[in-house]
Length: 442
Image (cartoon, rainbow, N blue to C red; front, top):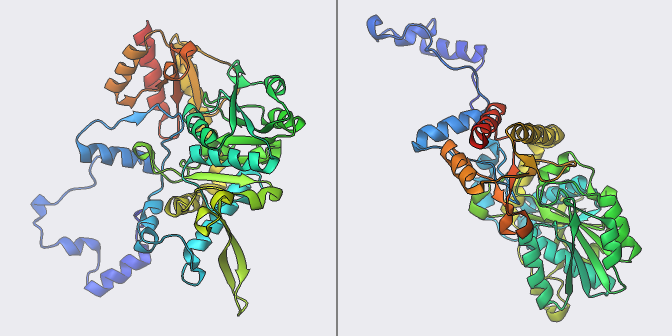
């Protein structure tokens, strides 16, 4: 919990209650010779992030590693109140709210989550939450091909590789034909979508910011999907970008899905994650999972209920819309608490992420590294590195988890590193990294 000091009036009341005239009277039994004279030589005030870093380092006795790695899982600062409120037993023990009369708190939180996701994505309807971003994309594609009664999906190769792997598995089991669209200069081109489109295509999947951190032209890509009669699906793996970029729903996307882990949750060694899925109003009855709605009870009081529950547990068998059977409720609650605190300043925080990333990118350029692509990006960018192993080892020695080597997923970029910067890196740390890069490549 955050420390909240007492007021002057509260201090005076406590002194009166103890019979002391001043605080020094409370220490009169301590010999004068061993009393501390004045305040110790303290450092200048620190932010909450800096205090947590310093305390964590002292507690562990080890070097605290700060990631330069993103690629779908991001370390953002989580205010202490998020952990404190989510640690309450009624939240930890709550499960799927089948009985609304005893689940009003859980239902309210889910309703707020849906509302916030709609506002951030520019969509009309959002469900109660999904397992993670990858399965959220897979469910989005299955929903789109059902709605369009077509059996083919086009997926940009700039979509997160893990998401594409999961989607291919779903498509194989669901008899959906999967095809990838090439990217050019790091982004997906509408002309490539037009070239691949045919009358059997039910969905077109793009990601913005894409896997390389570059911002796609979602409006043009959505228009290309629409020309072919397909649903435009926009994936977001770094939800913090929604605080700065134009919402995908305002750019013509029919479905917006992805990962909301950045809002109040930690990377956590890969989980748990928090998927989200939002759609246009006419797809509401096709959406998997649950929808929580607001109504009134028999006494006219505000009440929340599960409005739609289109899942396999309703014995729909082959007509079931998905296998989603729970709602990541605790993770959704974390995001609601986080956004209730930082929502009004989300644009400012997202802009800080971009500025810090731009600072490191420019510093690495001055150090002798070359950017792989030009163009607008959010908090991730790719740089060419002639000695990835050596540079990564040096970053670990300095206390940083190095960026991702792109060669693991893209053979043609085996000499490239994907860097990520969030508000967890200070300007001083960024400058130190750039300076060390300069010495390394000199």
